[in-house]
Length: 348
Ligand SMILES: C=C1C[C@]23C[C@H]1CC[C@H]2[C@@]12CCC[C@@](C)(C(=O)O1)[C@H]2[C@@H]3C(=O)O
Ligand SMILES: O=C(O)CCC(=O)C(=O)O
Ligand SMILES: [Fe+2]
Image (tube, rainbow, N blue to C red; front, side):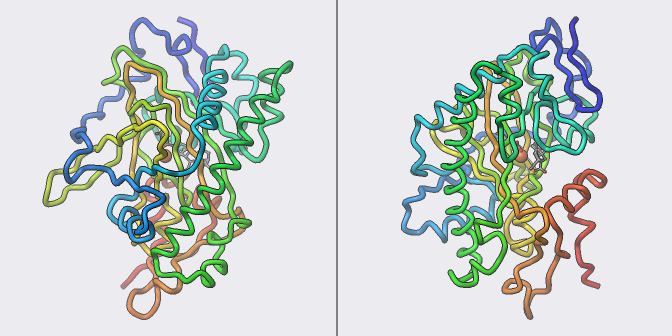
């Protein structure tokens, strides 16, 4: 078996995922800790039409009750999404040794390979990732010396579209929390010039035994909001905790073509003083290749985010101490899912 392995980066691809039997390193034992359920009835993941006259109210409710929702009528042309999809396909179809030329290096967000949470995982994920920071030119030149510009142009076109969509969504979320237009511009994440974004491309290769492997382990996103594009194949699941309806379960997010999935991350949970739900999610594998692109929005590195003073006033005290995005990521790298606990303000 030819293994493309890098311990440091936790990339480990059994023959570029073309295997005869799944190696034990990729078999997860606790995948069925909670049942997987379809998104129907009370488990129907909210779908929000961006042209809805009650948009603000609906977004606020979805952020509080779910921490995840699907958006339609978002105004991004399907051609832009198709072009992104074909470039993602082109990237991940490259031979492993070519992709490893742009492998992530210690301390850098951008590049090919594993992702921070993989360090906490007992097993390898059935996926490949490629993170893009401010520019994709250097990496694209290494991957396609003779034709790198198409990739960069498509990425730039997508970034432009998704940045304005992200700003619209964050704006609507902040209004739903009761901020006025004037107050909104005064807080860091309400000011689009103070946002930092990271684009993360994911490939989840098909697997003949998908019930034993996992595309991405359960996690919350650390930033404010993530907008996820996918190629119409389902796989993303969100955890719904035990309630009056049912025990704790993994709800499959329906994969409707030309829609996006929006996730609330840790920093939005902090900013909203616990009102918005930072949703725990994972990605399962199927017998069809899946591609996704998660676009993360957070504050620029030097900006601290704490509970909005309007929400953490006299009636309700602030639940968390302010933290920067890199500060929170560093705490997560040490404490994993206990990082938010560490910035919690003791109410006693
Ligand atoms: C800007 C980001 C956001 C990152 C780190 C960096 C690039 C890769 C992102 C992810 C993608 C996979 C889940 C996650 C939890 C992971 O391990 O890597 C994300 C993480 C975060 O949300 O913190
Ligand atoms: O592939 C997906 O649907 C979700 C990806 C994700 O959760 C992430 O990159 O953080
Ligand atoms: Fe995520």
